[in-house]
Length: 416
Image 1 (cartoon, rainbow, N blue to C red):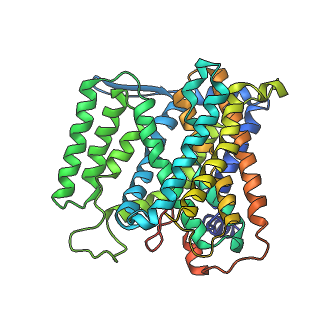
Image 2 (image 1 turned 90 degrees about the horizontal axis):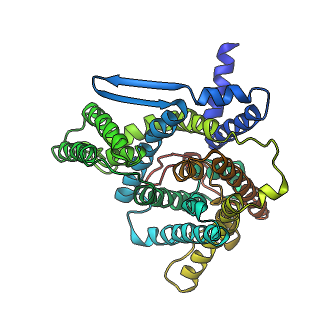
């Protein structure tokens, strides 16, 4: 019986929609627990203090911050690996392929931010959250596409992957520039010194991963202590990982970066992101009224995700194509583009993460969670309806589509 249960788990994990479904269940569990008699245990669990000390070096944080600063650094490390691979060999390696998702991502960042600022301009304390609706949760979005099956052409999945990777890169830059506390110059110099050492190892042709991980741990601690958000250390380390071993051809599917990417994906998809969702999505619904939903902070986030994302992505692509600068991928029509534009409004993981950086106040964070949930759910529902209107199932390359999923490294295609 145990063997049969394990086989079912393996079959589920191998499905394209599995990471998105797992993330959804983790968020739902957090909502249920924090709105039940177990609420006090949920709060106490996230507040459990954890301390690590080596000599004079001490890191003491509650469990919630270990998840947000520690586990999410692993997530950003994977994002960094995927960005590097895409820029070197994937959809972003050629200008003619990159122009459409780059412009779409710019629209999907600027318009939601403008929507948020317009709604919150009368509340200066809320304006730090301007970047919250600018993010896209690729695991959820790709999970929705997977559930729609052959109604979605493979080219559309690739476009969404590319948009999300650029979106992640923009989020990294935004966090570095706008959500950095007071800097410790000494810690920052230690982190930069470690980064230079890793670059030298790369240039020397060192392909063993152990030195990168050990020095990477030093970089993470230094960045954590510097005031720059610790998750950025994950991206710094990822950019130094060699793509391939010396002598390997471009067609070789092995190499330090590719092997680390494949090894990390299941851990990130089924452990790191669900834990983050469970720790951050548990908004208390007790006492919430309709007027609370219309407060500037949750309304700005919800409308930024639901309206801003679809308007920004779709309109920027429309202008690009109509001016002849870009063209739609083969087999993709305007209904497909609008459906994907809606799905980019599923902010969830990245939106909650940026919200945790923008606000310390518990009431503000509850408002952030509420706005993210409303905007993301609305975007998911509308995206499903629009893409299902593409009534006849479209012909797809079955083998290719099976390879494309959250974090999948396809033959030259993006992951995550």
